[in-house]
Amino acid sequence: MPDIQYRLEQVRRIEGTLPGPRSRELSARRQEAVASGVASSVPAYAADVDGGIVLDVDGNQLVDLGSGIAVTTVGASAPAVVARVKEAVEHFTHTCFMVTPYEGYVAVAEKLAELTPGDFPKKAALFNSGSEAVENAVKIARVHTGRQAVVVFDHAYHGRTNMTLAMTAKVMPYKQGFGPFAGEVYRVPVSYPFRDPEGMTGAEAARRALLQVEKQVGAGNVAAVVIEPIQGEGGFIVPAEGFLPALSQWCTDNGAVFVVDEVQAGVARTGAWFAVDHEGVVPDLITVAKGVAGGMPLSGVVGRAEIMDSVHAGGLGGTYGGNPVACAAALGALETIEEWDLIARARRVEEIIREELTPVAEETGIVGEIRGRGGMMALEFVLPGGKEPDADAAKAIAAECLAQGVIILTCGTFGNIVRLLPPLVIGEDLLRDGLRVFAEAIRHAAQ
Ligand SMILES: *Cc1c(COP(=O)(O)O)cnc(C)c1O
Image (cartoon, rainbow, N blue to C red; front, side):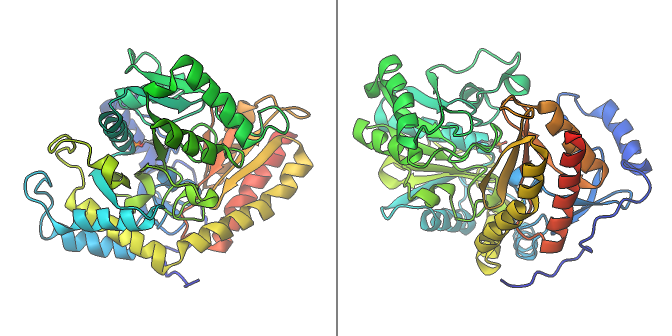
């Protein structure tokens, strides 16, 4: 694997207090100006970000184990992304692809078709956010099938627009008070090996879900089955082997579109281009966003050309969708993944995480499970001796990590999961340093 040159020194350092005086000043301004519904997990304000380091406005250097929620897979200032963005922005910031098209959009669509699984003709449409991609996948599936029902799963997260909130499972904080939500969305059980009956296979979990679909929705009414291949906000839940292939097969047999939401798990994050690749599953449509453009806002729906092309001309789009600067960033990010072999690095990140954290999990008894793939790993915290979720432990651990200068995120329906999403360009020493702080915090919480 090539060595990566960093601009910022890759060491953790707290200068005085966290947050420092300049961050506290910005917090005070924010209190007056920014709506309080928008919350931040880290109290420090960013000044510069490179590799695995977030440098704040007071000179603190934090270890980044969150990547701005799985976005900066290639780092937040990857040289190829920066160079291509500069080049693009000096020529034009926008024309609107629906008015005057440009090459970058076409090139990203070609690249997505090339990288996603399936050796059939594929096409893509580009948007701005993950939510928008998911919502458009539903629109496309409905037109293609002439049906309305959308099947989603327990613990799912698909975004915050009205349609995608209907698809998202968790009420607090995402849905509370924001209804009524879009109709024709049906939720069925997912495969959650840690909490399912002992020994339940992926095929059995799929049968449990699909029986409900057949009885409560009707197979002939289903436009799309939409699933995250590894659930993100819901708790980094990796379904039992065989679950995704069974859903895929059912969709084929019943004329429904199988949509896999790879917004969080996709684009090298799990040690493969797409998380479905681990099981050889070939979705009809895939949604991508987060990691695809090195931090610039870009998302897309990519999949079978005949499905993508069912929509009438002008039926898909949006003012900013596939913005030229964001497309340039995406080409830079995808090139970086290839040149720096970040897929192999994601696998190495998993090895290091398992190596550093398995001992502390065994020794403390509060870690129910370490799970995930590649650079998308999580620990599920439970009360000792059982499986009762322990959200307080996860919260306390994340807070202690932060106080020590390590950015770590929590997630999960029960709030008891700590997830690790380091930028894949993080150096091994810095990653181990961050994980050791995490391990110490777990030991504290277990006392
Ligand atoms: C983050 C996320 C979304 C929503 O993406 P936004 O860009 O925040 O709208 C959708 N699906 C999954 C799986 C996600 O992780």
